[in-house]
Length: 139
Image (cartoon, rainbow, N blue to C red):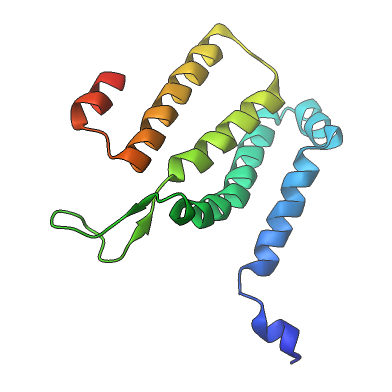
């Protein structure tokens, strides 16, 4: 086995495959094909999963650089420092899917506004450790 194959992580090929899949899902052909086949919701599910799969490792690397790391302490379950900001990756997957869908009903607008508020409070809490009363008020 050559040196290049030995240094690749076991997930590299999978990440590349999913990244290529996400790029394909952004094409109009993929959306049209699945929509015309009656699989519009499957398209949205696959797109959101793919975007989340690609964005999550990026957020995982960025979180410590931004100081968004939860340190082990008394009542915490984890024994090692843990990256925060996972909600940002989920929000990006949601937002990309909603924007790609272009079906903005009043209900979806309400969900988007509420999701954005929850994201803002979650990021502020991850970075600034907000008191519980502020988090409860936002909910």
